[in-house]
Amino acid sequence: HGWNGGGGSDIRFTAVQPNTDDQLTVPEGYKSSVVVRWGDPVLPDAPEFDFDNQTADAQSKQFGYNCDFVTVFPMGRDRALMWVNHEYSDESLMFRGYTGGAAATEEQIKIGLAAHGGSVVEIERAGNTGEWKLVTRGRRRYNRRITAQTEMRFSGPAAGSDLLKTAADTKGSTPIGMLNNCAGGTTPWGTVLTAEENFNQYFVNGDKVPEAQKPYIARYAITTGTPSSSRRFDRVEERFDLAKHPNEVNRFGWIVEIDPFDPDSTPIKRTALGRFAHEAATTTLARDGRLVVYMGDDSRFEYIYKFVSKDRYIPGFDRHNRELLDEGTLYVAKFTGDSPKTEIDGSGKLPADGQFDGSGEWIPLVSGDRSFVDGMTAEEVLVYTRSAADKVGATKMDRPEDVERNPVTGGVYVALTNNTNRTAAQVDEANPRPSNKHGHVLEIVERRNDASEKTFAWSLPLVCGDPNDASTYFAGFDKSKVSPISCPDNVTFDKDGNLWISTDGNALEKNDGLFVMPVRGKERGYVRQFLTVPVGAETCGPLVSSDQRSVFVAVQHPGETDDASPETPSSHWPDGGSSQPRPSVAVVWHARNKKIGS
Ligand code: FEO
Ligand code: CA
Ligand code: CA
Ligand code: CA
Image 1: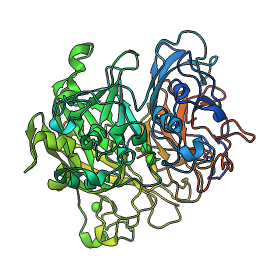
Image 2: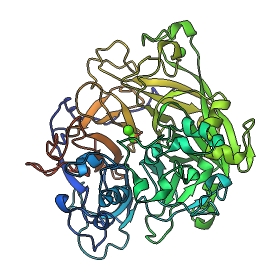
Image 3: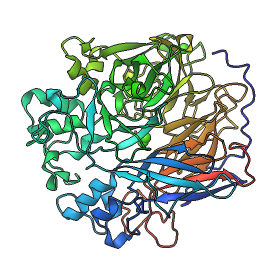
Image 4: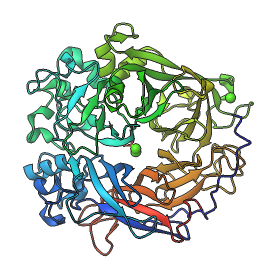
């Protein structure tokens, strides 16, 4: 795409070798430490963590479980606020002898509710290095826990819709809690956007809703009946029983905006951004200043979306900017390949033009109270967005996870993590491998490089897997030099525009990790592994700090392997010895304080 004249990537470290070690492994010359662990006190009055004496009250004041999205708001050079999502609870690792939802104690269920959500914590730089530590003393006025029980509000066109009303909230305006917050983003006005992903798993009796609602229960794969594996939140809060409160499920699956600098603020579910298994929400500005948000729906055969605000962002005009996410147009992506269908034969072999590539368009779904979808009202499009996207012929993708825009080139990158259900008959040029175990990365270049445009060019710079596997592609780079990579999940960029990719579910029988790949110049496609995470963990929330001296990663679900339990842990990270594994955020820096990537 004309970026071949770009300069060097500045990536010089020696790649970490794939391994199955129960530790965080970083390149030679780098150091790492743990910033905050599951159970560490967040609120000043929180007790110290005690694995064998957990309470819901303590958990609601301590760092939650399964850290995912991580972002940092600098407060000067040596202090910052860190926001972290807590995606989900894994009760079989959190409690000894846990045998499932029906047998769980009410306290365990309440601990689960409190372990969800997110945390705001103050962190401080350790010395004159790239290391950061949790502030553990003093007032910590911004520290906050958001949980599945925090009061929130709806805003935007679907707020107050009949589809969002329940017995407890007859106005459809005040949802309680957020669930399964996976990745996210930030706004130019300094707030967090956090994405409710697999909310479908928290409810019971999805089959006992009114007839008209049933197609949507199916489309969103909401739990039916009361399976033994379910958390049974309904046993302590009736709203999770859809036989009694069918609309409660419509109150989850949103992008939630949280102001980390106002601990008393009410989190806002922004309905204009649609409802699906939101993976992320990355903002950028269009050429004319309108705010654009890119989003993935992470399930097999789901879609990629973007929202374009009606009004422009005005630097410094906070009151105006904070309304931007309520009015605008929601689009879904359609991808068309430029090679003959016969050349996309499912072997993964590149077509004759040498690229999986083509053109695409953003199809409008809804704008304010105006629906562009036949047979659906605007409110229906926003609440049942998947069904709306089905109707307009959007392209079904291989699990769209994170979406990020390159701050240097303007290219938009999507991690398509895998899709083992895609058959040979279902391949297309944008999803060219059947039974796609390892996933791929999609690059979108919008017309005039303007984020508000409705058409784009696209290509796949990376088709993941073992480089010895003929179906992999590393942008044409020498495959003998690259690191194997499988199941891209979260992506981010450093200031030089290098793409950082974290993985979840490595299907090459090695631990997950974090990788970097230049996207332009001679090293485009040169994937190198920067770190590996401990046994059973996925790598989330990668963030290269704006001073390029630190990399933050969330190490999610260490020890989450088949048959692992507190009696037989498969990981002892981060505390070592015979300790229980604890999901934690870590920071990595260069021992001689060099730029990350050196
Ligand atoms: Fe929660 Fe799509 O990863
Ligand atoms: Ca092609
Ligand atoms: Ca993810
Ligand atoms: Ca994931």
